[in-house]
Image (cartoon, rainbow, N blue to C red; front, side, top):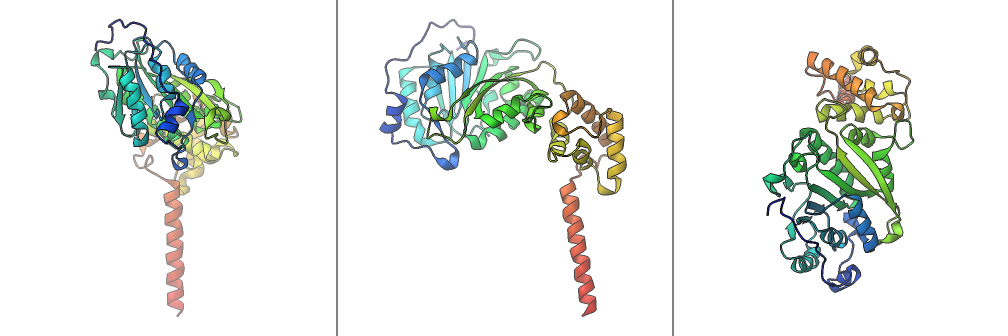
Length: 345
Protein backbone atom coordinates (compact mmCIF):
# COMPACT_ATOMS: atom_id res chain seq x y z
CA UNK A 1 0.00 0.00 0.00
CA UNK A 2 1.47 3.36 -0.98
CA UNK A 3 2.12 5.75 1.89
CA UNK A 4 0.49 8.62 0.01
CA UNK A 5 -2.79 6.84 -0.66
CA UNK A 6 -5.69 8.75 0.87
CA UNK A 7 -7.71 6.70 3.31
CA UNK A 8 -11.18 7.43 4.60
CA UNK A 9 -11.98 7.81 8.26
CA UNK A 10 -12.06 4.39 9.89
CA UNK A 11 -13.80 3.34 13.10
CA UNK A 12 -13.76 -0.11 14.63
CA UNK A 13 -17.15 -1.86 14.78
CA UNK A 14 -18.64 -2.60 18.24
CA UNK A 15 -16.37 -5.06 20.07
CA UNK A 16 -16.11 -6.61 23.54
CA UNK A 17 -14.48 -4.22 26.02
CA UNK A 18 -10.86 -4.76 27.03
CA UNK A 19 -12.10 -5.99 30.40
CA UNK A 20 -14.36 -8.51 28.60
CA UNK A 21 -11.44 -9.60 26.38
CA UNK A 22 -9.35 -10.24 29.50
CA UNK A 23 -12.16 -12.34 30.98
CA UNK A 24 -12.96 -14.10 27.67
CA UNK A 25 -9.39 -15.29 27.11
CA UNK A 26 -8.64 -15.73 30.85
CA UNK A 27 -5.77 -13.27 30.68
CA UNK A 28 -3.75 -12.33 33.74
CA UNK A 29 -0.90 -9.88 33.93
CA UNK A 30 2.38 -11.76 34.41
CA UNK A 31 4.18 -10.22 37.38
CA UNK A 32 7.56 -11.54 36.21
CA UNK A 33 7.06 -9.66 32.92
CA UNK A 34 6.02 -6.41 34.68
CA UNK A 35 2.71 -6.41 32.78
CA UNK A 36 0.00 -3.85 33.62
CA UNK A 37 -3.11 -3.42 31.48
CA UNK A 38 -4.54 0.01 30.68
CA UNK A 39 -8.31 -0.43 30.39
CA UNK A 40 -9.56 3.16 30.17
CA UNK A 41 -10.00 3.95 26.45
CA UNK A 42 -10.14 7.68 27.22
CA UNK A 43 -6.53 7.40 28.40
CA UNK A 44 -5.41 5.22 25.49
CA UNK A 45 -7.04 7.75 23.14
CA UNK A 46 -5.12 10.54 24.88
CA UNK A 47 -1.79 8.70 24.44
CA UNK A 48 -2.51 8.32 20.73
CA UNK A 49 -3.55 11.98 20.33
CA UNK A 50 -0.28 13.07 21.97
CA UNK A 51 1.64 11.02 19.40
CA UNK A 52 0.51 13.54 16.74
CA UNK A 53 -1.57 13.30 13.58
CA UNK A 54 -1.69 9.59 12.68
CA UNK A 55 -3.96 9.91 9.62
CA UNK A 56 -2.50 7.59 6.94
CA UNK A 57 0.49 6.91 9.20
CA UNK A 58 2.33 3.62 9.63
CA UNK A 59 2.52 2.77 13.31
CA UNK A 60 4.67 0.25 15.17
CA UNK A 61 3.15 -0.64 18.54
CA UNK A 62 5.30 -2.47 21.06
CA UNK A 63 3.76 -4.65 23.75
CA UNK A 64 0.08 -4.31 22.77
CA UNK A 65 -1.10 -6.84 25.39
CA UNK A 66 -4.91 -7.10 25.34
CA UNK A 67 -5.14 -4.30 22.77
CA UNK A 68 -6.27 -1.12 24.55
CA UNK A 69 -3.86 1.28 22.80
CA UNK A 70 -4.19 -0.86 19.67
CA UNK A 71 -7.89 0.08 19.40
CA UNK A 72 -7.14 3.77 19.85
CA UNK A 73 -4.46 3.65 17.13
CA UNK A 74 -6.79 1.87 14.69
CA UNK A 75 -9.47 4.49 15.36
CA UNK A 76 -6.96 7.25 14.42
CA UNK A 77 -7.30 6.40 10.68
CA UNK A 78 -3.81 4.93 10.31
CA UNK A 79 -2.69 3.32 7.04
CA UNK A 80 -1.28 0.30 8.84
CA UNK A 81 -0.58 -0.79 12.39
CA UNK A 82 2.11 -3.35 13.09
CA UNK A 83 2.07 -4.88 16.58
CA UNK A 84 4.83 -7.04 18.03
CA UNK A 85 3.78 -9.15 21.02
CA UNK A 86 6.00 -11.66 22.80
CA UNK A 87 3.28 -13.22 24.99
CA UNK A 88 1.23 -15.70 22.92
CA UNK A 89 -1.73 -15.44 25.34
CA UNK A 90 -2.63 -12.07 23.80
CA UNK A 91 -2.65 -13.22 20.17
CA UNK A 92 -6.32 -14.40 20.00
CA UNK A 93 -7.61 -11.05 21.29
CA UNK A 94 -5.38 -9.17 18.85
CA UNK A 95 -6.57 -11.42 16.02
CA UNK A 96 -10.13 -10.41 16.90
CA UNK A 97 -9.10 -6.78 16.36
CA UNK A 98 -7.39 -7.69 13.08
CA UNK A 99 -10.57 -9.37 11.84
CA UNK A 100 -12.51 -6.21 12.73
CA UNK A 101 -10.04 -4.02 10.79
CA UNK A 102 -9.27 -5.91 7.56
CA UNK A 103 -5.91 -4.95 6.05
CA UNK A 104 -5.13 -2.51 8.86
CA UNK A 105 -3.53 -4.61 11.61
CA UNK A 106 -0.48 -6.82 11.19
CA UNK A 107 0.44 -9.05 14.14
CA UNK A 108 3.93 -10.40 14.77
CA UNK A 109 4.59 -12.90 17.54
CA UNK A 110 8.09 -11.82 18.52
CA UNK A 111 10.41 -9.85 20.78
CA UNK A 112 10.70 -6.06 20.35
CA UNK A 113 14.34 -6.24 21.45
CA UNK A 114 15.25 -8.30 18.37
CA UNK A 115 12.52 -7.50 15.80
CA UNK A 116 13.85 -5.82 12.60
CA UNK A 117 11.33 -3.02 12.11
CA UNK A 118 13.51 -1.39 9.41
CA UNK A 119 12.25 -4.07 7.01
CA UNK A 120 8.60 -3.82 8.05
CA UNK A 121 7.28 -0.75 6.18
CA UNK A 122 7.43 0.45 2.54
CA UNK A 123 10.69 1.99 1.30
CA UNK A 124 8.67 4.97 0.01
CA UNK A 125 8.21 6.15 3.60
CA UNK A 126 11.91 6.93 4.03
CA UNK A 127 12.92 10.57 4.48
CA UNK A 128 16.26 12.35 4.63
CA UNK A 129 17.39 12.89 8.22
CA UNK A 130 17.27 16.67 7.80
CA UNK A 131 13.67 16.55 6.52
CA UNK A 132 10.50 16.52 8.63
CA UNK A 133 9.92 13.23 10.50
CA UNK A 134 8.53 10.40 8.33
CA UNK A 135 4.92 9.22 8.59
CA UNK A 136 6.09 6.40 10.85
CA UNK A 137 5.48 6.33 14.61
CA UNK A 138 6.40 4.07 17.53
CA UNK A 139 3.82 3.87 20.32
CA UNK A 140 3.79 1.57 23.32
CA UNK A 141 2.80 0.86 26.90
CA UNK A 142 6.10 -0.77 27.79
CA UNK A 143 6.47 -3.41 30.49
CA UNK A 144 8.64 -1.84 33.20
CA UNK A 145 11.30 -4.56 32.97
CA UNK A 146 12.15 -3.78 29.31
CA UNK A 147 11.52 -0.03 29.13
CA UNK A 148 15.04 1.17 30.05
CA UNK A 149 17.06 -1.35 27.96
CA UNK A 150 14.68 -0.77 25.04
CA UNK A 151 14.96 3.03 25.05
CA UNK A 152 18.78 2.77 25.32
CA UNK A 153 18.75 0.38 22.34
CA UNK A 154 16.56 2.77 20.33
CA UNK A 155 18.70 5.78 21.28
CA UNK A 156 21.71 3.91 19.91
CA UNK A 157 19.66 3.29 16.74
CA UNK A 158 18.97 7.05 16.58
CA UNK A 159 22.71 7.75 16.79
CA UNK A 160 23.37 5.33 13.90
CA UNK A 161 20.18 6.22 11.99
CA UNK A 162 19.24 2.56 11.66
CA UNK A 163 16.57 0.24 13.06
CA UNK A 164 13.26 2.18 13.36
CA UNK A 165 15.20 5.31 12.31
CA UNK A 166 16.17 3.96 8.91
CA UNK A 167 12.98 5.76 7.79
CA UNK A 168 14.24 9.10 9.17
CA UNK A 169 13.53 10.87 12.44
CA UNK A 170 10.79 8.47 13.57
CA UNK A 171 8.87 9.83 16.58
CA UNK A 172 8.22 7.72 19.67
CA UNK A 173 5.46 7.97 22.30
CA UNK A 174 6.12 5.56 25.14
CA UNK A 175 5.15 4.86 28.74
CA UNK A 176 7.62 4.47 31.62
CA UNK A 177 7.48 4.38 35.39
CA UNK A 178 6.91 8.00 36.40
CA UNK A 179 10.38 8.19 37.97
CA UNK A 180 12.02 7.01 34.74
CA UNK A 181 9.90 9.45 32.68
CA UNK A 182 11.03 12.30 34.95
CA UNK A 183 14.67 11.25 34.55
CA UNK A 184 14.40 11.16 30.77
CA UNK A 185 13.09 14.74 30.65
CA UNK A 186 15.02 16.15 33.65
CA UNK A 187 16.74 19.50 33.15
CA UNK A 188 20.31 20.32 34.22
CA UNK A 189 20.51 20.78 37.98
CA UNK A 190 17.32 18.91 38.88
CA UNK A 191 17.31 16.04 41.38
CA UNK A 192 16.07 13.63 38.70
CA UNK A 193 19.00 14.41 36.36
CA UNK A 194 20.66 11.11 35.45
CA UNK A 195 22.47 9.09 32.82
CA UNK A 196 19.15 8.62 30.99
CA UNK A 197 18.58 12.40 30.86
CA UNK A 198 21.86 13.03 29.02
CA UNK A 199 21.67 9.99 26.72
CA UNK A 200 18.14 10.89 25.60
CA UNK A 201 18.55 14.66 25.37
CA UNK A 202 21.77 14.73 23.35
CA UNK A 203 19.92 12.84 20.59
CA UNK A 204 16.24 13.81 20.95
CA UNK A 205 13.81 16.46 22.01
CA UNK A 206 12.22 14.80 25.03
CA UNK A 207 8.84 15.76 26.49
CA UNK A 208 7.19 14.21 29.54
CA UNK A 209 3.70 14.98 28.27
CA UNK A 210 1.44 13.66 31.00
CA UNK A 211 1.18 11.25 33.91
CA UNK A 212 -1.29 8.38 34.28
CA UNK A 213 -2.22 7.41 37.87
CA UNK A 214 -1.34 3.84 38.79
CA UNK A 215 -4.99 3.13 39.66
CA UNK A 216 -5.84 3.30 35.92
CA UNK A 217 -3.94 0.04 35.36
CA UNK A 218 -4.83 -3.57 36.16
CA UNK A 219 -3.18 -4.79 38.28
CA UNK A 220 -2.43 -1.45 39.90
CA UNK A 221 1.36 -0.85 39.90
CA UNK A 222 3.01 0.67 42.96
CA UNK A 223 3.97 3.74 40.89
CA UNK A 224 2.30 6.17 38.50
CA UNK A 225 3.18 6.04 34.82
CA UNK A 226 4.64 8.82 32.65
CA UNK A 227 4.02 9.20 28.93
CA UNK A 228 7.10 10.51 27.09
CA UNK A 229 7.38 11.79 23.51
CA UNK A 230 10.72 11.66 21.65
CA UNK A 231 11.61 13.48 18.42
CA UNK A 232 15.15 12.79 17.15
CA UNK A 233 17.20 15.94 16.56
CA UNK A 234 18.43 16.76 13.06
CA UNK A 235 21.91 17.20 14.58
CA UNK A 236 22.99 15.38 17.78
CA UNK A 237 24.31 17.67 20.49
CA UNK A 238 27.34 15.40 20.91
CA UNK A 239 28.93 14.12 17.70
CA UNK A 240 30.82 11.13 19.02
CA UNK A 241 30.11 7.37 18.85
CA UNK A 242 27.22 6.31 21.10
CA UNK A 243 29.35 3.85 23.11
CA UNK A 244 31.92 6.55 23.88
CA UNK A 245 29.25 8.98 25.08
CA UNK A 246 27.61 6.22 27.10
CA UNK A 247 30.91 5.32 28.79
CA UNK A 248 31.66 8.92 29.82
CA UNK A 249 28.10 9.54 31.06
CA UNK A 250 27.90 6.22 32.95
CA UNK A 251 31.20 6.86 34.72
CA UNK A 252 30.15 10.34 35.80
CA UNK A 253 26.76 9.27 37.17
CA UNK A 254 27.97 6.19 39.04
CA UNK A 255 29.12 8.64 41.73
CA UNK A 256 26.17 10.99 41.44
CA UNK A 257 26.59 12.47 44.95
CA UNK A 258 30.31 13.15 44.48
CA UNK A 259 32.08 15.85 42.49
CA UNK A 260 32.24 14.97 38.79
CA UNK A 261 36.03 14.43 38.86
CA UNK A 262 35.43 11.30 40.95
CA UNK A 263 33.54 9.44 38.22
CA UNK A 264 35.63 10.85 35.39
CA UNK A 265 38.73 9.49 37.11
CA UNK A 266 37.43 5.96 36.54
CA UNK A 267 38.00 6.43 32.80
CA UNK A 268 41.76 6.11 33.42
CA UNK A 269 44.10 3.43 34.84
CA UNK A 270 44.98 3.98 38.48
CA UNK A 271 48.63 4.85 37.81
CA UNK A 272 47.65 7.77 35.51
CA UNK A 273 44.29 8.65 37.10
CA UNK A 274 45.08 11.91 38.87
CA UNK A 275 47.11 13.41 36.05
CA UNK A 276 44.85 12.39 33.18
CA UNK A 277 41.62 13.35 34.96
CA UNK A 278 43.05 16.80 35.56
CA UNK A 279 44.09 17.01 31.93
CA UNK A 280 40.60 15.97 30.73
CA UNK A 281 38.83 18.54 32.92
CA UNK A 282 41.24 21.33 32.00
CA UNK A 283 41.05 20.76 28.24
CA UNK A 284 37.24 20.41 28.42
CA UNK A 285 37.03 23.56 30.58
CA UNK A 286 34.80 21.82 33.17
CA UNK A 287 34.84 22.68 36.87
CA UNK A 288 35.94 19.49 38.73
CA UNK A 289 33.72 20.37 41.71
CA UNK A 290 30.44 20.33 39.75
CA UNK A 291 28.09 17.53 40.78
CA UNK A 292 26.99 15.18 37.97
CA UNK A 293 23.44 16.59 37.95
CA UNK A 294 24.84 20.08 37.26
CA UNK A 295 26.69 19.02 34.11
CA UNK A 296 24.85 20.22 30.99
CA UNK A 297 24.83 18.42 27.65
CA UNK A 298 27.36 21.07 26.52
CA UNK A 299 29.67 20.02 29.38
CA UNK A 300 29.35 16.41 28.28
CA UNK A 301 30.04 17.39 24.67
CA UNK A 302 33.35 18.99 25.73
CA UNK A 303 34.26 16.01 27.92
CA UNK A 304 33.44 13.49 25.17
CA UNK A 305 35.36 15.45 22.52
CA UNK A 306 38.50 15.62 24.71
CA UNK A 307 38.17 11.98 25.82
CA UNK A 308 37.89 10.95 22.15
CA UNK A 309 41.18 12.73 21.37
CA UNK A 310 42.82 10.99 24.33
CA UNK A 311 41.53 7.62 23.09
CA UNK A 312 42.85 8.35 19.60
CA UNK A 313 46.29 8.99 21.13
CA UNK A 314 46.09 5.88 23.34
CA UNK A 315 43.99 3.17 21.60
CA UNK A 316 43.91 0.99 24.75
CA UNK A 317 42.21 3.71 26.76
CA UNK A 318 38.68 3.20 25.44
CA UNK A 319 38.68 -0.51 26.37
CA UNK A 320 39.98 0.23 29.89
CA UNK A 321 37.53 -0.87 32.61
CA UNK A 322 38.32 0.19 36.17
CA UNK A 323 36.33 -2.74 37.60
CA UNK A 324 38.54 -5.16 35.69
CA UNK A 325 41.62 -3.43 37.13
CA UNK A 326 40.18 -3.71 40.66
CA UNK A 327 39.45 -7.38 40.10
CA UNK A 328 42.93 -8.05 38.72
CA UNK A 329 44.58 -6.16 41.59
CA UNK A 330 42.55 -8.14 44.12
CA UNK A 331 43.49 -11.42 42.44
CA UNK A 332 47.18 -10.41 42.41
CA UNK A 333 47.05 -9.62 46.17
CA UNK A 334 45.39 -12.96 46.89
CA UNK A 335 48.00 -14.82 44.82
CA UNK A 336 50.77 -12.95 46.65
CA UNK A 337 49.31 -13.82 50.05
CA UNK A 338 48.84 -17.46 49.04
CA UNK A 339 52.46 -17.59 47.83
CA UNK A 340 53.69 -16.04 51.10
CA UNK A 341 51.70 -18.58 53.16
CA UNK A 342 53.01 -21.53 51.14
CA UNK A 343 56.61 -20.37 51.69
CA UNK A 344 56.09 -20.08 55.43
CA UNK A 345 54.94 -23.72 55.72
